[in-house]
Image (tube, rainbow, N blue to C red; front, side, top):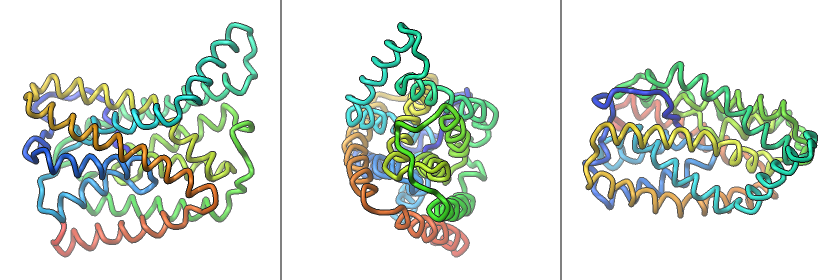
Length: 295
């Protein structure tokens, strides 16, 4: 899950719970965030489950938002050749007036796909990111996990999986972007929602995952920059910034490994393992919250 952090908020509303954790706990949570951010399994859910099971404080939404920059670093480094080629091809297309080129269409698809997220983020993020928000409750996150697991299962059933990058259109960018905007709700998972949407549109599994990573770049940049700005306004201590650095380093390494592993896996396998995992996790969150062994 990628929880977006786009709207402005007053410094006093920012949850700085991660400062209480110390470097070792932040290191562990950085690894958790890095892996689960890019897999279709909801990083928000795991960032609630792991601290709860270990008796640690909730690190807060700002911590998760900043650690998205670790995923950005991993995606940029892993797909650097693709991104460089895409940017260069788009510049050449604009210069030559060739607006039907694959590079131009892909770039515009990513830009258009970011618009729904910005709109939804500006409208609802202030409520969703507030400390104590009911949307960050374990039951709410569990319900979101279950719903998205069922949608991913449906996408596996009805998706044709015949379309690769050469057959993507601007409309694909828009519709996957609309689905991406749902990831503002904790537990939905940005990668999970976009991969699901892409599969519904008939994309190959590996293409769906790669498109999900690239489509998320503008969103991650916006969310991370907004979170950094709010932490600056909140007067985060030097110790707090050093803790974030530890999390960013561990998160970058684990995110890179997650990208490699997911793409290799989807070359030959389906997403059913993530369907069952998210379904089980959603049930675990709900039962754990109601029974009192998760907080």
